[in-house]
Image (cartoon, rainbow, N blue to C red; front, top):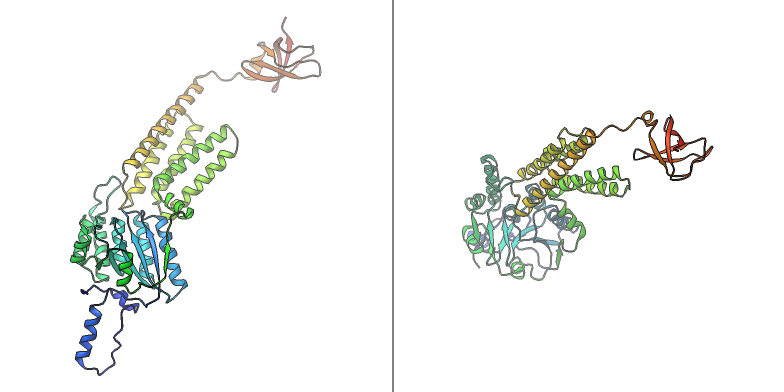
Length: 437
């Protein structure tokens, strides 16, 4: 068996065979023991120990964080019983904020952490940092790792300060586990390695055909396997769904319009739905730590729409739409591994077009209302003709239609339904009428 890179953390966890040499042993035996250690696999958990396998065939989002948290919780709940936590990584990246949380959990995990890129998978962007943070790294033939340069919202390389910071992070992770820091750092500048290249360069500790071979090399071939996956898990799926700042913004925007519609057509149902959407959006903001400035722009932009309803014609609606879109762009801008792709851009264009239509409609409607003659003051109805909608008589108030509006009316004479009436007096919101000959 060829020599393998052994992480210092794995040694501290006591997962390698301890030579246990007493003082005074002869030097040749010491050398033989050291040679034996160097030729072992990266870690060798106790036989019969449990292995926890986390299915991360997904974006690095809040759902992925929840799965890793469950795995670490199981390790802590069964101290000494879990030999390793295997992260099966097949990802094109995700949120830097979530990536940092997962790396933190990996660092604090009492058991050996193993990153494994299975057959047909790849590990790019934020996933590459998680890969490098594990005690042991393994890849199947035909897989690749790398391409983790931070970018802006439109996919352009991030500023030099951000790139240098992420390069230092990758270098530190590699050095902490005895790997080739230079080759690892090159991934931050979009270097990609196949499994064989990663092994040759010291980025990957071993190349294995499948999970069975991996566990065999780790001394866990007969260990009980516990699988943790988000497939079919509604809570994990929901966490992944609300992790998207674009969706958060759309939910806030939609909630606002549902409330507005419910104000003019009271049903309370739309308000309940709106509050649920708003709660989900704010939950998502808290889950992934969306930048406060981005959230503030979305909320302020939405609020300007309400201002437009109160003071039409100012143009706040259009400004509000632009502020919401700017908030979405900023939310992605603060995430160095997320890009507004074609689908996201299409959604943004739909939001922009929809917002523009709403803004134009609202402006045109309010402008038309302002240009209409003011509603007649009740006193100005005196002398106008109307129609009795119901019978009217002494002591029997009825309803008349005057100037396209219905009014309560009284009369000192009997007036049948449908008869023409003339308004002779106004008392508050009540009209006194007489039958028109």
